[in-house]
Amino acid sequence: MNKEYISTILNQYDFLKGQEFEFQIFGSGLIHGTFLIETTQGKYILQEFNNSVFWYPERIAHNHLILSKQGNSSTLPFALPLPRLNKTGNSLTQIEDKLFRLFDFVKGETLQEINTPNQAFIAAKAYGIFAEWGKNIPAEELQESIPKFHHLDWRFENLEKAAKDSSGLNEEEQELLNFYLSQKPLVEKYLHFSQTCPLRITHNDTKINNLIFSESLDEVAAVIDLDTLMGGLLLFDFGDLVRTVACSEAETSQNWDNLSLKPEIFEILLKGYWEGVSKMATEEEAKSLLIAGEVMTCIMGLRFLTDHLQGNVYYKVQYPEQNFHRAKNQMIFLESQQNQAEALESIWKKITGLEN
Ligand code: GN1
Ligand code: MG
Image 1 (tube, rainbow, N blue to C red):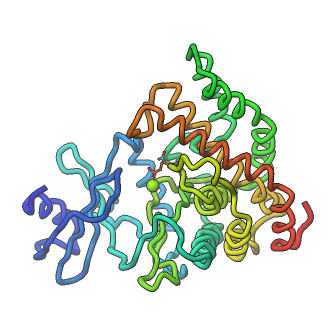
Image 2: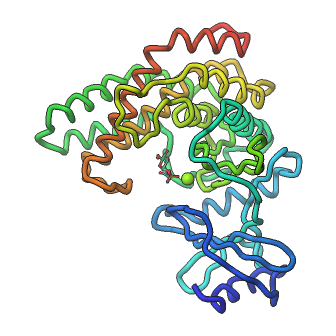
């Protein structure tokens, strides 16, 4: 992109029209192209929207509009950078066949993994506060930016179908398949909570790198990556935190023998998230947090194994077996959570003051 092209985009925003600016490529995002724009008035992030990953940009725009109209994000202790509206009141700006969005720039640091337990606490608390903040916005009005994204039963059926269609699984593939197909009881538990828990506004991708921390790393400055934000269950957000923060190894690790759930991090995450949601959470929602990590880990494992059997059509892979290895990583982590269920329940009782 050259300066003239960017200038055409910026001119679609009344508050930037005709302004002098500098620009540079920004960050390490893999999905959307990202630029930092500096004007005398302030700094902005310009994103070229990738609509081959997100098929329904208009649904995302719809969701963000509801959030900005019905939620007052100035009451949050961190920024929620929604796209700025262009002169036609749209959050997406189309130039020829490309789509762009503009955000206010938030100063701070992103982390790929936590360095201290306190970072897990403040991260979980931020996502909890976010859910609490959204409680008055009718979640049913939000549209599914990725349909059935965290529906465990649907992900389970997809693996069953993929397994039927693929012939000649090797021994290890069969072992993984058998493990995931044995997770029917977890699917039943998920279905129970999907029927008894209210629909909330959830982020649905609560990884640590979707937060901007203050430069001192002791506060959350912003919750970002709001494309998967839609109606969901609290367990989705808490569960993905457990999946990605409470594991001793990264999702990409093949260090099978060292891969386990760290109960002390689970405790810190629950403490933080519970501080955010305890006032609004129903008893069923509180109970759902106990299996949240299992549900989200199972979903990712099912998705990775399905993609492996289908020939790596969804996730980018650096080598052919990578999705198989990711599915194996998630299987070991899920087993570790299930083996420690009693200890996790004691922690849960201590923090929530409830009986399961
Ligand atoms: C994808 O692209 P990224 O890393 O933000 C996926 C998430 C998974 C994650 C697993 C839209 O997220 O659901 O948790 O990979 N996002 C989408 O690494 O499918
Ligand atoms: Mg993301």
